[in-house]
Length: 111
Length: 116
Image (cartoon, rainbow over all chains, first blue to last red; front, side):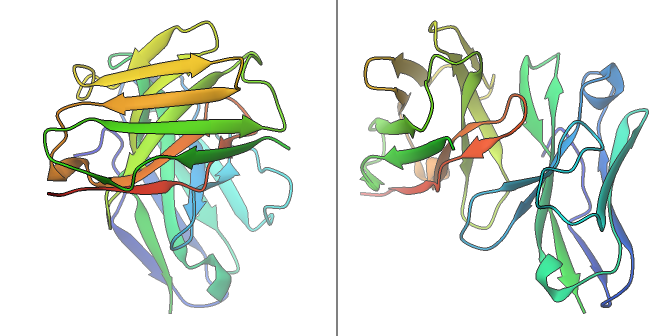
């Protein structure tokens, strides 16, 4: 069981908006540690899509946005496109474990 | 552009030791950052194994700490991972990565299967 909790799957039609939640606790997200989001396509390494809660690396479409509040964070994707179909993971730091923690991952399906 | 490349045996026998090397190119391993190992069992999520600083300081995932050793070879710009007493549950794609800070860098990953 992952320290950060994500829904196993989300889906949406092309053009729609979806959100992926990442729920932590007072020892990680709630303690003020940043949340980062990765996109992973089949057979490839994770790629950073959001860092520092809200920042998009160069090359990531502005359809992707991140937010954080309390012990949770969210990744929002607007104007869904077929190419967005992938697994998404959140990452943060946990002071109790003195290490990095990941969410269990969310599979996004574009209907 | 920093690039990471994992290498090592793709098959390890149960109770043996998994040993992997990560070669860093395009940048110095002595840059001010921590270098991590992350693994992903087939069809499952990401699990952080541990991290090492170029000075040799380490932090480990408590669930693996008793079996993991990380080391760094600055002369070769390489990181190493050793995981002892492996079982089938250790079968995974193993990544070396720099995930502390931005930008992040990941190797392509290498599949290690634990089987007799």
